Amino acid sequence: MNLSKGLKMHRIRVKALFDGAEQGQPVKVAGWVKSKRVSKKFAFLVINDGSCQTDLQVIVDSDKECFAKLESIGTGSSVSMFGELRKSPGKGQAWELHASDLEVLGESSSDYPLQKKGHSLEFLREIGHLRGRTNTFGAVYRVRNRLSFLVHQFFQGRGFLWAHTPILTASDCEGAGELFKVTTLDLANPPRNDEGGVDFSNDFFGKPTHLTVSGQLNAESMALSLGDVYTFGPTFRAENSNTTRHLSEFWMIEPEMAFANLRDDMLLAEEFLRYLFANIVNDCGDELEFLGKMYPDCDPQGIENMGSKNFARVSYTDAIKELSAVSSKFEFEPAWGVDLQTEHEKYLTEQVFSGPVIVTDYPKDIKAFYMKSNPDGKTVAAMDVLVPRIGEIIGGSQREDCYDALLDRVNGLDLPVEDLRWYLDLRSYGGCPHAGFGLGFERLVQYVTGMVNIRDVIPFPRAPKVIPF
Ligand code: ATP
Ligand code: MN
Image (cartoon, rainbow, N blue to C red):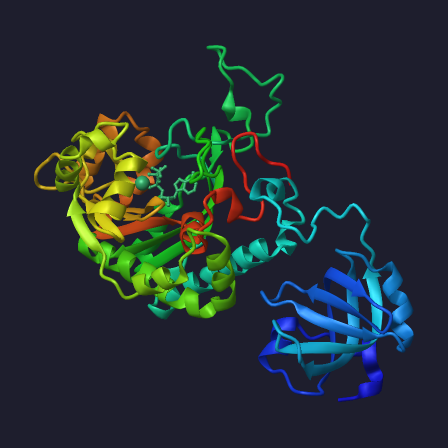
C-alpha cells in the first residue's frame, strides 16, 4: 500500500476495517463525528460511518499539521481521515486510528439536534431524516436490512421464485374501505356520469384504481405457472388504526405454493420464521446485543432459542374454549364466530403456549373469500401465526381451488364476479391445491429488535396524519 497517497486512497468502511484489522495498517475512513474532545497534546474524535454498531475512535496529535482543521469540526460533521490503525490501550475499543491527515467534508451547525445524551424515541421520530445516525436506529435499520436478505436467502435456497406483483390494482376484493384511491382526475371538478357519480371511464385506467393491500391474488397466478413463488414488496392500507402494530404503508412477504395444503403452509411458515430467528442473532450480533441492553423487549437469546423451538398448534375452536375459561381477564369477551382480539392473541401465545403458536381453522365468516372451505361447512383452512408481544405476525390459508365453491363465495359476498374472472379462471384451467401466507415484515422487525412501536422499525413510517419525510 502506498502510504504517501493518504487521503487520495479509497476509503474503507469501518466494519471492513474492524473485520480485518492489522496493527500499523494505513487506512482512510470517512464518517460522521459523534463527539470531539480536544486537549493540548491531542484530540479524540469518535466517528461512525453507518456500516457497523461500533464507533471508531480517532486520535490526532497536536503536532500534526491537520490538527488545526479540528477547529471547524462539530458533532454531526462529516470527515474523512487518513492514518494508521493501532491496537487501543484504552478500554471499550480494540482498535484506534492515529490520524495524520484529515479533511472536513461537511460542517455541522451548532444546533445539530442529536446530542450525546439519549433522546426519546418520540423526539427522534420528529427528526426521522437524522435518526439513522443514532445507535438505536443504526442498529434497527441494519437488522432490517439483514432480515430482508435472509428472507430472500431462505426462499431462493428452496427454489422459490421472487414474483413482482403490481402495486396499482383495480381489484378491491380484499379490503373494502381500506384502500387508497389512485386517480388523475381533477378532484375539485371530476367528470360525472348520468347518476351524478364520478365517471371513472375518464380516469387514467378507465376504472377505479387503488394501491394494493396484498399481492396474493397475482401471486396465485404466478404459483400456478411456476410452482413456488414469493412476493416481497410494499402494501398499503388506509385503515384508521392508530396502533403500535399498524402502518399505512408496510412491506409484506407472501409465499404461494402450488400442490400444497394447509399443513404444508404451516410447515413453511414455521421453518421460515425459525430460519430467520436462528440466523439474525448471529448475523447482527452487535446490533442485537446493543438493543438488548437498551430495550427490555429485545431478547436476542430468546430469539435465538426460538429458532430451534417447535411452534404450538391449536384450532380456533379450541383456542376460544381456552380463552372463554378465563374470559374475565379480557376487555372483549371471546366468542366463537368473532375474530380474536390482540389481547386474546397475546394471552394465547404468552400465557397458554409460552411461545409462537399457530391457530388454525377459523370461522368462514370472519375470513377472506378465497380461503378453502373445510368439510364441516363452518370453518376454513386458515392459519395465523401468533408470537409473544406482537400477536398476529403471519396470516395464511389454503386457497379454495374448487371453481363452484369459489364462485358461490364470490356471489354470496356480492363481490364483482367480472373483475374476478381471471382469478376464477385459475380454477378452470388446471387448478390445483395451493396455499400461502402473508408475513408483515415490520412486525417481524419489531419482534426481533424489541421496538415497541412499529413506526420505529421502518425508516419513514406512514400512518394516519403521519407523512413528514
Ligand atoms: P391485523 O388483524 O393484525 O390488523 P390483518 O388480519 O388485517 O392484521 P392480513 O390481512 O392477514 O392482516 O395481513 C397479513 C400480515 O400483514 C399480518 O399478519 C400482519 O403481520 C401484517 N399486517 C397487516 N396489516 C398491517 C398493518 N396495517 N401494518 C403492518 N403490518 C400489517
Ligand atoms: Mn390476518
